[in-house]
Length: 235
Image: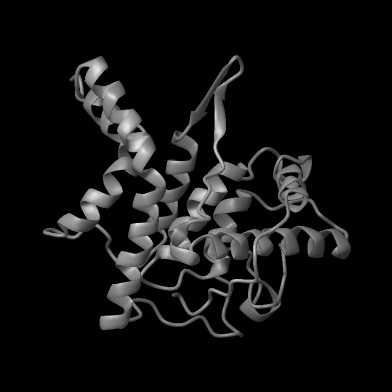
């Protein structure tokens, strides 16, 4: 488990709805990450072989500098956001039995779940890691990440960009359904894969530690101690 992970239990349905309302509020100018993509991102952050600072993933979630002026509102939003982080952590406990993916409907009039946004969030989350996930010869991890990459549409898009067909439509649809079925289990196994790796070989820091008087890496221009290094601070 990452050193920054602290499971404090799941959020209530009402709290999750409050967070979702915040994410679509005008203060983020339409730039904040939707809830399904946020859960995908945090599943990768929680599973990462190295500790991904909150300042890095929060910047991705917000997408812009929000127009929140009230300290009470800042504390409310940050409390919900960090509560959701802990909610995701708690879902990996108990052998992943509580890992419920929050998926949106494909579109209006189509009640099928859309996996692309969730998987895009997960891929973004693993890109924040300083350690390379897809090293040559790492077949176990490549196999586990295959459903995520396929459901994100990455393979199909890559083939289309080359003017090729990824596979016949009926075969592709069958593969999509298979990946949908195994996705939660694959996500939990990725978490366990990196957990085992961390136990056997501590991850070396690739970048210097951010000091409290250094400029905050989120790009705000403030000192770290006055920004993301301060508990529940939003900028």
